[in-house]
Length: 492
Image 1 (cartoon, rainbow, N blue to C red):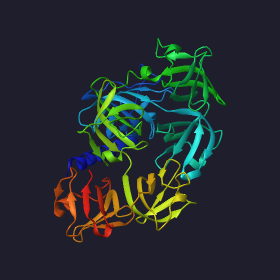
Image 2: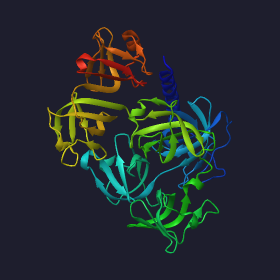
Image 3: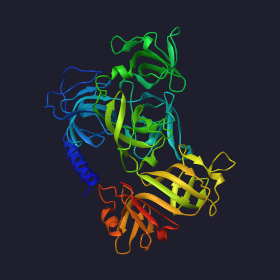
Image 4: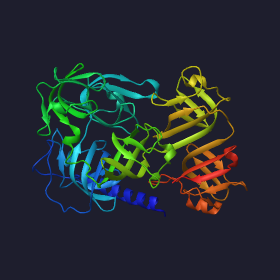
């Protein structure tokens, strides 16, 4: 078993054990000193190397970026005063703790980082996207969004008050990991975002697409911070009352200062989950708004460096140096799929294109480059004539396109996806929804993850189909047709 599968197995066992613990009550806490308005627990031994981890959690105690953190003794920072036992699936949190093996850890401090607490201004299901606007932010929900106190997206309504956790994408939208219906007693209104147009004379600035924040009566935090710190691009969290497009703040938290107690320090191990932004094809970009850098030794899991693009969801892991995460590993959080072939069907009404017998959904976030005259849209594609190159991910059972391009030629078929079945006798692989590929030709070239030539037997010995907690080996195959593959390469 390779290291990737071994670690996957350990994480799965840890998660199973953790979920069993949560069924018995999860992490507990008792009253003690607080930071950020929360509570803490009482003493557990601190072991392992320092680590800061940020992203959407699972309960049990806290499972974050593949590590189960024991939160029994953690200080919980939350403006609603929630305890460790009240942390829940889909909440975005930042954990400062310790871990030796990247599987189990101890949380010392946990900061709850919801983005919005406000009423819903509008809802939409257009363009194959479930979304709503709250606090000036477009919130996008998908099959992975967790709902609390409401049945699901269909249960949401205009004017309903919600608390939203999520991750910002390259377009400034919030991809919701948790949407909770809340009442007036569940904390004051709250928004997080980047300052624009600070106006000291008027005691105002703008946040989240036109929300005017009036801070004339606000307290700034942390202690010693004043309005003079406000500048374009500065990320803040404001608490108070939102009425229409005016937010009257009672508190303004300057995030990079407020979170210093849980932020990454020099040369500490750091993990961030989020969407890639500011990517231009170079080695420097951002994940979850944090600067990072890749290099020749960066390891990619679940995809390759070619899969990096804005709005791709990843977990970045490495060491923080000079405020920049030097990434030792980039793990793609959504199953990466690449399809190249003839568009056999195009359905404008449903927003889908079929390639290699796989129905791919196009939504409002999909980048279209169809070389047409209609502003790059599905209208430019002609079924049975045009070829397409599709970069996509699996959202539940739905194949959702991040990018659809119409290449200049149609000379090959290609698929990069996780193997769901294999037959070593007939030398065939199966991907996605019964998409088969034959690797039995005498001239088929086989390569390992380093691009080195290997035998057919070595290739099939390395392929593990998806089963249970194992997601399956990522493989890329291509040829004039997939019925006679010319090249097959392991991608993990």
